[in-house]
Image 1 (cartoon, helix red, strand yellow):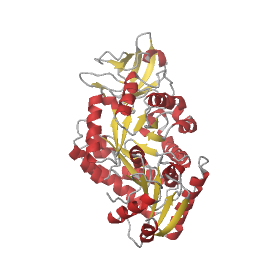
Image 2: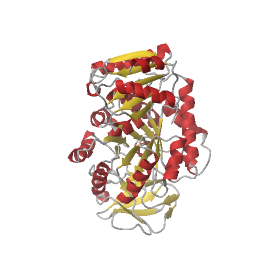
Image 3: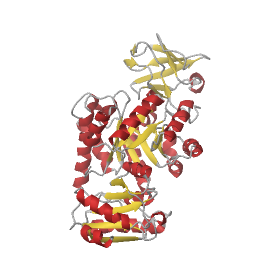
Length: 473
């Protein structure tokens, strides 16, 4: 599929609407990665989405979210309508249903951990409660705004650190499930420190899985510990729903910019998520504020943008995907996206050649960069500079190919390994010409190695596609 857009789109898919036809329509519309929210799924539900996604394309990355150390309202038979200054009680007991004016929560020690004077925010802050007093059994709360409390909605307690474990039993089971079913990413919720990432990695190591971990930053501790988290995680998701409840809303735009910048410098993919085109759940057109929000995330140089309810349960999922894609394309077409980031220290040769390739592309008006990779590290290095040329990655591992679906400007394909990494590139260039990605007389750049795919990049070469086809034969 010949796409000009470099910013990637992640779409949340529910098992309630996940037919191959539906996913194919979204893929044609522009999605690159499918996300599953396990908070509302069984293993069978998730497997249905995974299998149907694979039927559509082997190039689509798949992310599974864990619940993480989250707290939710328990199920209720009927939503509770509340008004300002109503009094309700809250108690931690996941076995109970909320009823009357008693709201049960999924965390047993909820009453112990939440002090008097705290604010309790339900459903991303749509309902605010003030904790007036407590006893051994209940929190006694005043309602601070009119609204409706629903079951299974998120609960946040700003500035209060609850003692939940990093991984629930359901999370552990889903991580093992992901390893058994060839999933590409685990997005772990409410990552507060590097230890939370390591807890997930330990399970993956036992399963001998190469799944990559995306750390979801959703509270102030995650923001404070970002650098340590980046030492352990493959990438970051800026989950602005809970983040904007835990941290003053006016701080979110600058936090978003700082997190994206840190990820780009560290060669870590970054996703901006939550309510990007929220109104399109029920409307075929976004608000002007939403358009600006998507555009600003692109101007910040994010790798990917995420749709949640817009594609999981919305009325206009295809239109939402196309709208997001058009906004990203417009931003990318209007200005150069190049970022002059410092070299990385892991592989100095690859780092130097990657930067040289992107700078040459800018100065020589080339049409594309073609590079091969085993681990994806050289491709991430190219992507980090946010160059104007598309990066056609020829990858010798199918999982790495799918994982690169999350990276800015990268269009990855699987390539059968041969004795040297130069020879297969001729076939790749022929295939790219046939697919109309560029023409035989277009100037392109190759980043490759003379000493086998496992040895990494050792040269860059600049010529027309036609010349390189002949030279690589």
